[in-house]
Length: 557
Image 1 (cartoon, rainbow, N blue to C red):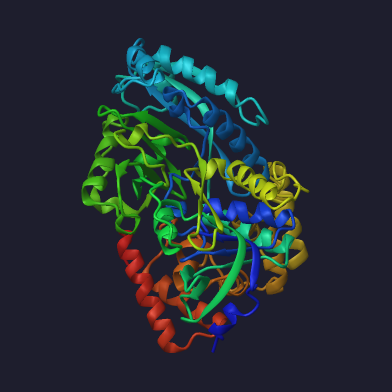
Image 2 (cartoon, one colour):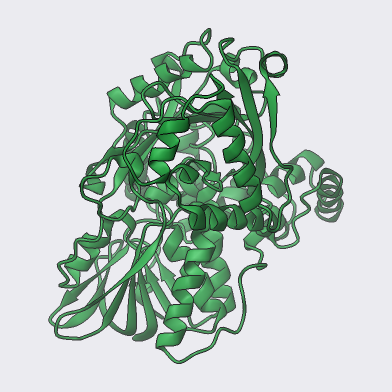
């Protein structure tokens, strides 16, 4: 039987920095501070990157729409960070050619000017002139560390030859490049693992929470139910949309947050998937919203909504949102219908946006900031990380880390601008190099070449450690031969797995790719149970919890 009490053993009595929240902002800051030699304790109430960080559009993008509101600093930083991630995390962050359909020549000029000046305006038509101007600016802001081509405009005839299913009423398209992340949850985990490797005195604990009890910071392990008091010089609240709730548990009555929920669909529609031809379509709909769709692991990701949500724990993808996203596709692909039975997966998260009274959801800034409060009675500083997004997590972490280093009288000893993440360290991004690396793994561990390609794509250069641990012997799961029992066991033992959901929804892409079935769930539960020493009762509870999680995400088992 696993010793659940052991989770609190080795927990430091004192940490220089206590980070509350293991979403992408918390994970990024954890690694940065660990690299500086700072003793850090990170506590996450669920699993790492299991909240809003697991519910994004999975894009690493410069944010072309932020040009309309004059957020040039955010666009410049986002484009720069996107370009860095294409190098630092090349195993998960990939180029994505993007299509902007254009329905007119002069449309949107007046509304764009009004928005740029900070005035309210509905922008439902972005014409060719506005699109061209925006893409020119976008190229300018993305010039640093550029690895992808500049934009190009294409007339109607060529655009329809390129993508014949597009709405024939278009006048032109703008073509440019963004990036997408194939497995966001794993990238967040790798930041945690890299941080602990860089500083063995640091610790990241999932499924735990912190509250102020009798004037002490108390960590409660949600797995064992045990508690332990800790102290810190600085507390960082990286709770995302939960920041005010986390502060309340520390005795701080803050009102920093005012998040909006965003929902996404993953649909099984082969015609839609093929119509995209590997590209993302990023378009403004008739109601003024900005929507997107792109291929994801053989299916199609559609997003997203932007609706005020005061309680992040209540956020879910509603039937109305599913209906809206399925229907809006007809504006760009009028002859392709998305039906309810094609929905394979949904997710919903609350963006950690700053409180902004009187603004429409799409008008709230996506930039980030840091608010400082004090714990009453202790005077302990609490830095709340407000806003931010996947693309800019490294830059935000760097800003927060530099502030903390200044507060503690330390100097930065290593930059993270060119620091590879996890399996991105030495990853062979070019096709020829990838094939050579897979062939080398196959020869070294006597494993089938296709297996080595698959593991290299999933885990980057971390595939070598997995193959070495398994001795090259990988036994395919009966219910899902693309995964091996030894592979699942390795993840359970080495990657802070505490629940079956961790494996199905985050350490692997089983749920994300639409491969989760009842048989797969049961077989993975058995393998995970053996690896982690679960008894029959625990395995049954884990199976039931994972079935409930699948139902919440509209996965039919």
